[in-house]
Length: 243
Image (cartoon, helix red, strand yellow):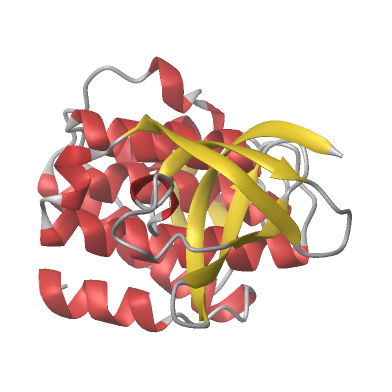
């Protein structure tokens, strides 16, 4: 059947001299593969809208659980700021790979919406590290390894939360503290905010560098310990940023 659908191209695979298969993240159908015949050609009207990391609207002959066929494509947002900045491209490359892995392990309803909102906020100029960490926090539930955002992982109390530990698997209260590293209290508040915030509602981010680094390190360790996801794009991002 012929349908129109918005989506973000996470990856592409060459097919012959002038065609390719694009893997598109969508809200209604999840991750779908689309054959884009002739789209690699300079003369193709679909060339720009089918480039990797494009946010476009696709008119396709949809086939469930099979390769769909592209009829036409139009750009929704050109993402000019992202595509002109190697640092931002590196963030989006990682997020695209992460979203792809999350989709393979989950059918979470909010994956697409959160991902698109995050990409658009990076395009608007908001801090890409913070947006990336917010998405990482939100994706944990989809991966089935979300941590309890409101109480101590050891005793369950919601009072006197004093730090957060990837080894323990979440928040720790004052009474259960052993040798865990103490984080600033604002870090705990920020991680809760990352979990609950609607990304679309964010208009500015004023987070100090130290707090961002603590949260990012915690999430790196948590993902490594509990998700089993290891992405080369994350290693590259670490190297290019020097963290």
